Length: 236
Image (tube, rainbow, N blue to C red; front, side, top):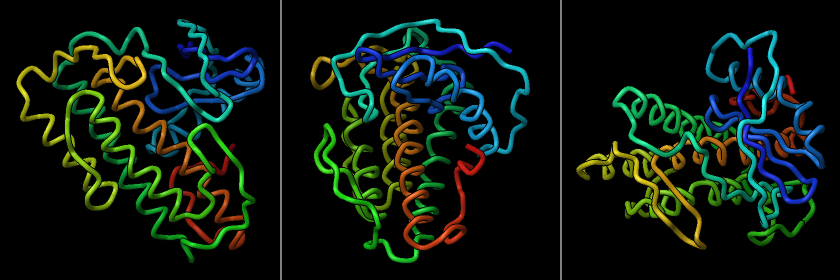
């Protein structure tokens, strides 16, 4: 099986997005390092959704994007070629369901952390400020991109409620707009291009980044097995 990948890089630092598996990604200090992680990420993504992962796969770069961003910290602005153009109702329902499940699972992971304000992680600066260290900080950071991502395609949703409720509200507001399935490409903040399909993919991608960080932090802080491996990262 061939896995189409979008290669986003800043010099040798690489992000590989698995195009047919929204939100699945790998990172590496080189393309080779990122490619080597594809099978494990693909398996984790399938386990999370209760699907059988392909046992024989090869990654193929179908799009390349040179970025000025700090991709080593998972900064990204790429729009996939496949993320432009109209969506079918079936495609939209599938992407929406994935984005909502991801939010619900992120909330479940957060609520399982014994102490949301405890962390063994040291402070570290990233492109968006200090890295979130505690489960509460990770949760608030992840929840607050709901309004950001929806806002980039003109949906004013805010961040009231929990991450799952605010994301569901965003989709409900989106669906009140005529022609939303046309999936137009819009220029958002900082000149970045956005579409509805990209927003759905970015939700799952961003959730997975911070869910992995939260799960690993909780296991180090409170002990292995202290929180459920909701996103099935354990095999990586």
